[in-house]
Length: 101
Image (cartoon, rainbow, N blue to C red):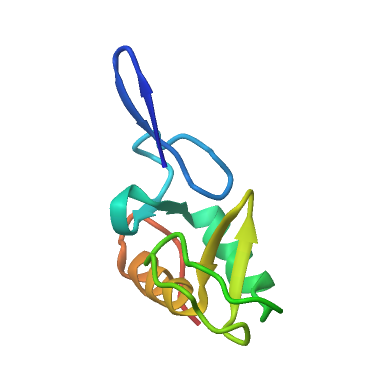
């Protein structure tokens, strides 16, 4: 997510709307979608299946099947595939203490 201001563009996590300060770890999906490490941790712990097909905010695939694991916050949804992919990327980042286990 992006917010345009007079002095430039501010990048925000699509899920918690926190600003990227170049310190907080974040990963970008398609077309500027972003998830921070804190939200990814919540997504891994709280992902579930649902009742209706959905669109993933990160990979933009739609409609995804109702049974596919996903997590939603503030109207943004991340699918189980993107949760796994983001977790692997954060685990490879030497600047984070995240492990993908």
